[in-house]
Length: 158
Image (cartoon, rainbow, N blue to C red; front, side, top):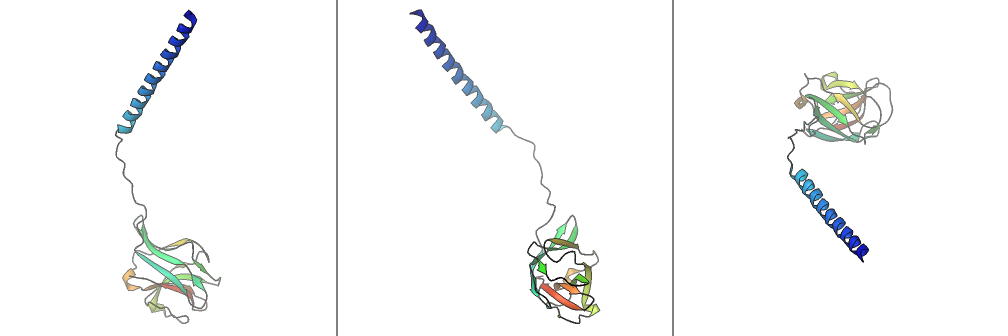
């Protein structure tokens, strides 16, 4: 008869101990949840685009979007992943003074060359020189210098 009493006592003690441990674990979890952590600050690396534009075809099919962004204090023209144009010799990214860029025969006084086109599709970024006033330009174009032909352009919304 004593054996069942010991078994019952062992079971009750184990249950009681388990319940108490669960209470202690719950109390510790609540304490951790209420603990305060030091404040951290998040630094924005790139700002929201100040301007966004969509490419349209010129001499060649050109499509995709571009954004004018500021990154670490510098301004950039950024083509997004949807950018695509045809391959050609001597392609450049230029800023143009007019909202619509002529397909042929642009004049030197009407544009500022930014850089040679890096690739004919996908995301890419071009630094805008600090001495360039973007307010003087109304569009961005992909332009073939050799044949003075505009492959495509995007009108800025600024």
